[in-house]
Length: 342
Image 1 (cartoon, rainbow, N blue to C red):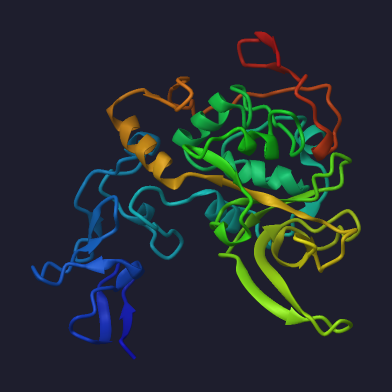
Image 2 (cartoon, rainbow, N blue to C red; image 1 turned 90 degrees about the vertical axis):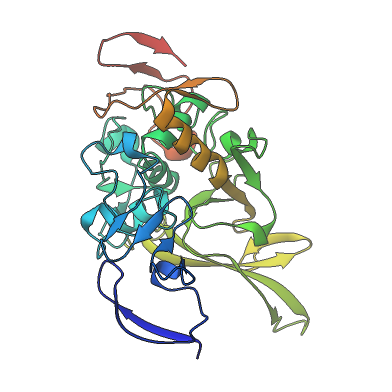
């Protein structure tokens, strides 16, 4: 055993059994041992456990004017986490806290329950697969949301774009060049919070879920052929399905097996096929957050990104109410009643 520590909520050690040279502690972060300050390096900022505060200003302070830029964990370390000193809740954390295991049943939200209205902080009462991913990403902080709107994940009026639409969902990630986003096809390269796309055969048969843990690669022996088969285990946050609508939104595990060079759910070539991880470039958004403090920022496609108004706008559409068949011909209306055509 190298280290065993108990901590008070804001990180002060309650009791510790540790190798004197072991540098990592609260939050898994590196502690300043040489200078004896007891402070932790959270990458974006330095954290002082004695004060329960950051020693530098929050690089995303513009997004949280109601909170001191030095406050840690939104002053609630039992409820909130902070992986790198930047932002308390990314899409995955938001979904875990607000949607997972809350009894949210499988049913279309956009077009039915909410009449296409998206608002920051809104938690759906029902949801199908990609709708849940969309809601989580649209609650990732205003800097990220400004980028999502300016590049077509939604439009600038918060309109929902479905999983298989020409400009949204899987195709939106495909249009990335890796600078800001990409569709990652290597099954081993998934990152927490990615959107996993499966199916996508162009016939409405598909699924999209949030990756909750790093992918697990393994092998198993086929019962019939006795040959070794490569396996991929994905622990996710997901809805249930149209064939099993009673499960609600929560933690689910998917097992893929490699068959003839492709990954199929449970090794069944007639079931979902793994199509890729929709992945955002973490370093890009850290840079975006830092630059936003200094003023208006511009994304990699030279579209100006401003700050998001805390009051979300309503949107209406004549598109189909099915998640995977939503088209980009929606007519959307903002609060000043200006109508645009997508």
